[in-house]
Image 1 (spheres, rainbow, N blue to C red):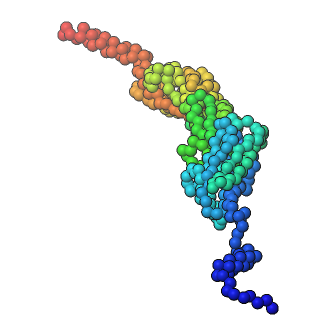
Image 2: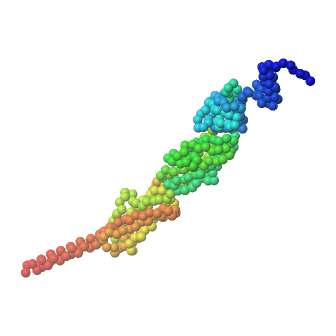
Image 3: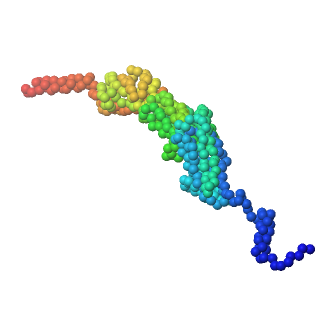
Length: 395
């Protein structure tokens, strides 16, 4: 057995205790080495490489984490000319965030692609840095080549039919079969004088609308023809502009025309006169006031009893905004008493919607024969009186 003689110094005892304690702490891992004291930061996204169309916006969720609570600055480098790239968080545009080991602040990277962006792959980098550490996140945006099947129009009824004066409404669907959301505007053009209105989406006053990838959006087109438009077929062209690309639809309206006529006289006077039992000619004018031709137009009449009315033309055809004149021969009854009579003229066409009528006041005059007879009677009466005065006046 080793025996220690004399007193051991207290400082030596303390140094020995510290050495033993340090050795035990290191062996138990209670004291971290210099490497474990370093902090780090990472920035990632679930979708670092995406495909989008020109004229759209791309929104990416960023996941930013750190091994210790720290302030991290954010910026985007390598943004192509004409593009935009902004970082959003908490309703603001942000340039930095606070990170900790447990949670990640909500940050979105929004990238605006110009309408004229050429097809290809574009690169940019999101950089997160703070307290001497940093992390880089490469972002790739691919603009595909334009394809005819990306965005298109469809409608169940590309052609509508109706009479002039009708409002025609087309319901179209804009189909987005592209891989990205698109914002579009729409306009429509028709013939001169027509009122054409095109509305995107469900809002009546919307100037543009957005249709998400793989979905559809409604488009309403209203066409109002001008008054008096002629019957026929009229084209309407609809153009939607989505991502700088035009999408067209061809519509058509067939105007069947409206049928209307008016019966009058060439000078507008609705009266005539003539002797009983004699022929009097009266011209009747039929005006086509509708927008479609009138065929098989004929005049009929319901004259007073024992009167006769005939026409020089059995039927006529009248173009829109035109007229035709038919001469009626009116023969009052031979025993018609002098005075005013009403003769009604009715006009009808093959198109049953077109009818019209007018009343002509016919004044029956005293016959010239009766005037002669009356004059004769008066002359005989006067002669008889003269003879009486001559024969008996001397007595």
